[in-house]
Amino acid sequence: MMSRLLVGASLALTVLAVPTLVFAQAQDGQHPAARAAMKACQPDRQALCKDEQPGGGRILACLKAHEDKLSADCKAALATMPAKGQAPQGQ
Image (cartoon, rainbow, N blue to C red; front, side, top):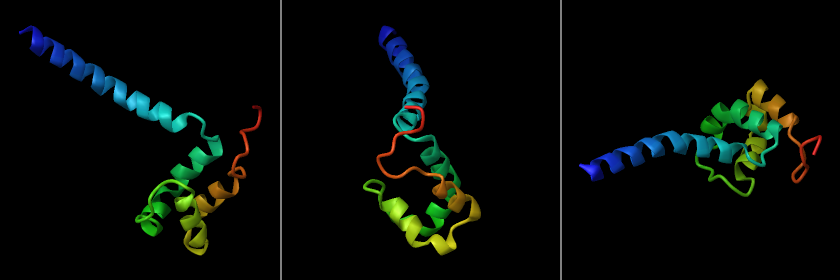
């Protein structure tokens, strides 16, 4: 009986904690313009770069390689991104 209670409590904590941790990880250290570009370019990424593995700037390079096919929202969002290694303003 006690083990069922512990398993249930552990499961409940996991269900509550995991989305919070994933969201926090995605937000930490990421420039606000980069987050906006990820959101704006998601449909373009799915259509044009779905086979690209994340990391090393591969997705961004793929999007730039297909610049003529990008949506207006994605193009605008990419134009606001800082240069690589540039800190957000105010830091």
